[in-house]
Structures are given as structure tokens and as C-alpha cells.
Length: 166
View 1 (cartoon, rainbow, N blue to C red):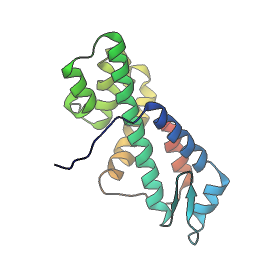
View 2: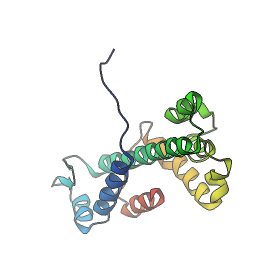
View 3: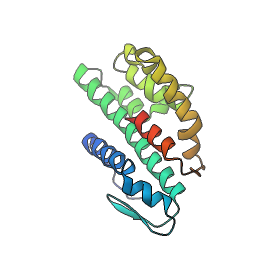
View 4: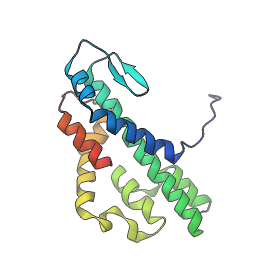
């Protein structure tokens, strides 16, 4: 109907994109640009002419989409290497919500890795990190994917978000 062809984003591109954005938001130049409403904000692959809040929202959405895609790609690869790949597994990897977890966090960080090995659930590997990720998704990720945007210029919060994803 839409005549659009889709392909997977190479995992290396997701990592490089995150690395470049992380370096950018940690720079003094970015901090100075965020503080100044009068000049456009320059990023590695775009110039932002709007307010800082929507830009920060966009950047957080971008890195979170990247990490979620990365998890799917890693699980696909590991299932393939382990001989666990079949039509049903592929469907679940391509749509983690078919895993029927209670939340996005549950699907991406516990149920997807469990397709490779149940011991790989984040909650089992690192309960403290699981709690941080789960809280971040409830308080930041889910709202910014459902109509909310960042309204503050709290760069400390932005740094903490990027560090969590890292």
C-alpha cells in the first residue's frame, strides 16, 4: 500500500550513532548552544532551529530506538548462532510485544534475551540496573514516546540518560 521497502539498520551504525551523539551532548559547544535560544544548535548530521526541549526529546527517542533495535539485532544473531532461530522466534524478535511482558522494559530487557537463554534476563544479571532501566522507562521513555517532551534544560538529566543507555 505504501510502496516503501524496509531493511535492518546495521548494528554498527546504531553504536556509531550513539557514540557520536554522546560525544556531542558532552561537549561544551553543545551545552553553550542549548543555553542560547538565539542560534541554531549544530549536531553531527543536522542543524536544529527549534527550542532545546524538543531537540533533547528527539535525541533521547533516537538513542532509545537505537538500543531497542540493537537488542533485537543481538538476540537475532545469538539465536542464529545457537540454532534457536525459527519462524516463531523471528516473529517475536521483530515484534517484542508478542512476548506479552507486562511492560516495554520487560519485553526488551528480560523476555527478548530469554529467547537465547533465560539466565540473560537483565533482572537476573543486574537487579540494580534493571530497577534503573525500569524506572527510566516509566518516567521518561514511555512518556516521550507517547506525546510528551522534555521541557527542562537539565543537562545533568540528559547526561544521566545517555550514561544509562551506555
